[in-house]
Length: 241
Length: 302
Ligand SMILES: Nc1ncnc2c1ncn2[C@@H]1O[C@H](COP(=O)(O)OP(=O)(O)OP(=O)(O)O)[C@@H](O)[C@H]1O
Ligand SMILES: [Mg+2]
Image (cartoon, rainbow over all chains, first blue to last red; front, side):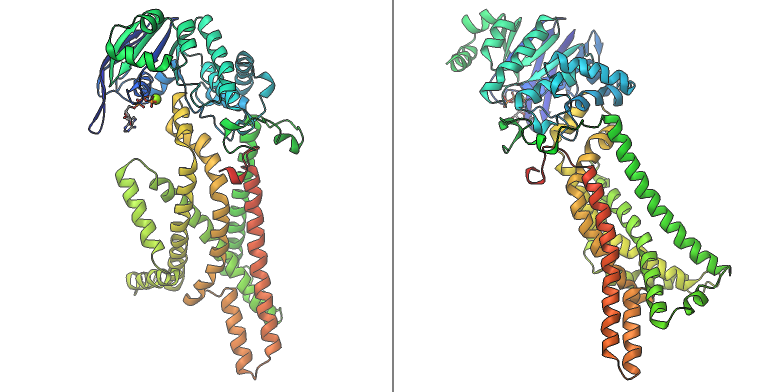
């Protein structure tokens, strides 16, 4: 469904992605792990063209999307994204955060948009917080609203960039639960995370990145219990403690 | 209340202080802010048009403003003339200054090199000189350019140039205020907006603008207040505004043997008039500020 083909990205002199290729299949949850600075976020941002690859291609359902003829706005409606720091619009309520993409991007009527938005908030368990502003919500609640905001546009896939890293421990569970439910419903997901429990139980495949390349790829058991590469062994050793 | 959203363990505690009235829907909010902006714009335009019509009617001889004013006692006449002139200057200088400030402030944050360069030059140039010097230059340049051209009213042109110079000076300050407001909107939010497929224009209108004003409005209020008083600088080029009238009246009284009490009264009246104008403007801005307030996000947390 999403294919990344030999993608390179430079930030000035810094060669951040050095020829990354991967395939995300429809309905799977792909987990990406790797040390800080290895290029995980940059890779995700390439997939929805928040960052444009300097070399290589991004394909969505076989269509090359890093093409000047294709509007990046269109691509981003197909591939949703959830950020580490939630990034809710602070001047809008939870409901309005979900509504705005529907009215201003999909151009739905406000009644239709509100109906969908209420449904999405219900889905992330926040129907009762529809009228609260982000500053009135806990981190976990904010992140769930952010997930609802991404889902509302009915994307083909959702990218999660360390969605629980900025959360206090007591709020991590509720966000992972929502993500697990999504995965079980068959949503295609790419998740950068260091939550090993989630990676092992929910991830269909795990991909280990270091220094801008994909070092190793396999099922959660293969990566966590029988890593082949030395770098993977060291990294898995540190995160499993 | 915690310092950051992530550490906030008591959601909604704070908000309940304001009662639990239902938050307006997005559409209502947009309509309401549109309504307010329209009302203010309408008020501004109506004032400009009214002042303009007043002058125009006098100009084509429908009535004689001077005659109407001459029916007032001398002091009242002078102060009314001054007040009209000050209001007239304001109706041009404030919207023009804001427009320039908004445009160049936005250009200062542009990703385009040329846009930034032009805007930065504007800001540095017009902020770097005292407004009175700018006014003098504007007038002198106008005179040099249009001298000898009988078809135009040189005095009116020169005055207009002075007014524009003052607006440009204020615009340079406002540009920085606007820029600070735009930069205060976290990049994470513009990125999130991009990630749901919003276009640049939609992001500016629906994400950046509503949030930047929360930061910019108090500073803009300050700038407007000082701008109102700066219109008195236009007396140097013959603008018959309030301060000029004050000086004129005092001078006349001094020559006529001096009635110090009366001079004091005149200046108290002028001070009150300035105060009144500034008060109305600042209250209006406070109303706008309330409109952009966000529950749970108090000023201290910005
Ligand atoms: N916009 C940018 N401009 C310049 N350098 C950047 C930019 N974005 C990322 N980088 C650099 O690229 C490298 C990879 O960054 P990236 O955020 O993709 O890593 P990451 O694997 O997500 O790390 P982390 O686990 O810390 O989030 C880092 O050295 C980072 O400093
Ligand atoms: Mg990252």
